[in-house]
Amino acid sequence: MAARPMTRGSNVALTREIPNLTAVVLGVALASPEPVLTDNLVVATLLCTADSQVLSDEHVVFFNQLTEPAMSVTQLEKAVGGDLEQIEVDLADVPPEVARIVVVAYINDGTGSRRTFGQLREARIRVLDLADNLELVRSENLADALTDETGLVLGELYRLGADWKFKVVGQGYSNGIVGIAADFGVQL
Image (cartoon, rainbow, N blue to C red):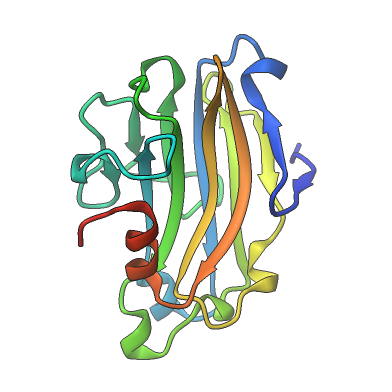
């Protein structure tokens, strides 16, 4: 059973509502009728401080670096259940200096080939309980509001006191990974 879609900007208190939740899977679904676009989509996870700056280059998880130093956040080599990518997060093992776990997507060759997220028919993020694969929350289809963007912040897990919350973001970037990197302090 699929969870009711959450709109941009909405959030949910995951561990307050589910006290025994210890690990989640963040599933990203990005779909396009154009295979060349789908083949050039990159999903990355940024482990950030409270001021939304990535801790270091080692705290960017993506296809070339499948985990971060503490091994609490790992991009799975094979996604299932209709997701393009899945990221496993062991909430208890996330280092205390990590306040935000931000999931972004960008087009690897977006500007040069004139491909944009406006060509997507689907862009969603969802949270599953790792213990039983039960879908806890899912975003609305973020693709409906995209036009010329080549980068996108889909959503984030973040700490609020001792609890973990999840927020649907849906913020697009017309300058792709360059804009995302500038905002989150990622070295390109």
